[in-house]
Every structure is written in C-alpha cells, then in structure tokens.
Length: 139
Image 1: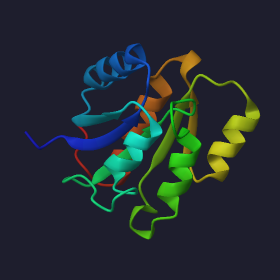
Image 2 (image 1 turned 90 degrees about the vertical axis):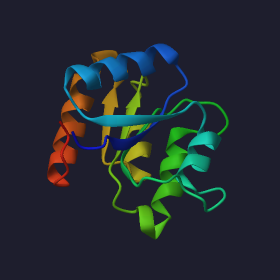
Image 3 (image 1 turned 120 degrees about the horizontal axis):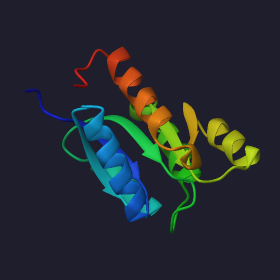
C-alpha cells in the first residue's frame, strides 16, 4: 500500500475532525490528516511563520474560517503569497452561510467553498477528484 497523502486540516471543533476522519476512511482515501486547531498552528505547520515546513509535501489544505488566533481566510491569503505553495489545492469547509464569507475565501485564493451544514460528502468528492487530477493514488 502506498504511503498516505498529507492533507492539512485547520479545524477547532473535534466533532468536525472526527466526522471528516470517518468520511475519508469510508471513501477509502489514503490520506493523513495533519490537524491544526488554530490558524497560528496551521501557519507553523505550513512553514509560513518559521520557514520550516513539515517533512512531507502537502497534497491539499482544508480550512475552517472561524478558528482561533488567525482566520482560515488569513491562512489562505498567506499561503497564496508563497510561490512554492501557489498550486496546493485549498478548500474551505465552514459552517458560515454568509455569501460574503464564501466570496472572501475565494478572493483569498481558495479553490472551493463547502458548507459544513450540508455534510462532508461534497468536500470528500472534491478532495478525491483533486487528488486524482494530481495523478496521485488516493485509494
């Protein structure tokens, strides 16, 4: 079996983390979620704060908007300023139903916006499709 693909998840709600973990397993996606519970931690894990990114390159990033310290939109903006991270797929997975939040996320460079209230199925399908397009073994 291939090594799991690294995906950064910025999520401060442990229930949402469990739901995503179970949904990824049910979809048989071979991914390793690297979980950050606040935006500052996500920036550290991306190597944006200190220039020392984690060992394995990330295949995708999933961000919640409303998290402590640094918002998911700000994390996305700062990630997109890095030339070496410009092509990492970024999906927003938020409970916000505000169209202005969705617009701000896409303006910050997110590739897609999904609402938590409809469940993770669309996000999982997007992630599978994204990993397949990258030519990486997702299952």
